[in-house]
Amino acid sequence: MSNVNAGSLEGATPILSERDQRGNTIRLTLAQALAGANSVVVFATGSIVGHMLAADKTLATLPISIFVVGMAACILPMGGIARRYGRRAAFLTGAGCGVLVGLLSAMAVVLASFWLFCLATFFGGAYAAVVLSFRFAATDGVEPEMRARALSFVMGAG
Image (cartoon, rainbow, N blue to C red; front, side):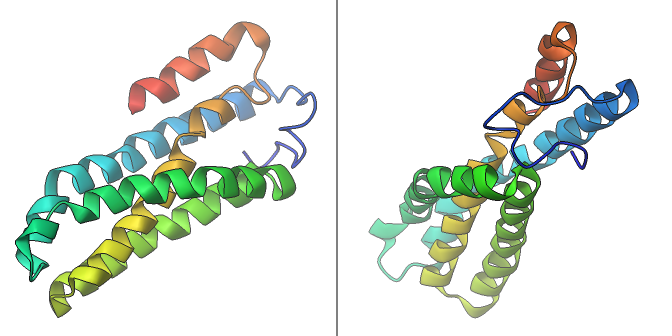
């Protein structure tokens, strides 16, 4: 990813060396596999934790809804970051949101704060918004005949 220029979304991307192509595909595949767990964990545990923390139990599934709202709200801003500063900056921003999810969620459970947990799930949605673009980055700088394979690896990891 480090060799892909910031303008890769607007124009033709130069073809990278075979080593860099393979390295990018491996990194994106691993990132997709690890980041894909974000959504699964939120969907699997969000309502359980929400039920434990909420004073009004009818709000138990609100954290999952806020996750979805976070994803929808952050898709365009993350695309704007990628367009202006490059995909690397957008991916690092997303990774920062991923770190916030973990830290805020843990703090919310320790402090028994439902609303802090809801904020954490919003950042989880922001992280998920970035993860959705990994598949597009898989084709950047790859030989045309190898694009389908790179895309398959990244998509398969999710």
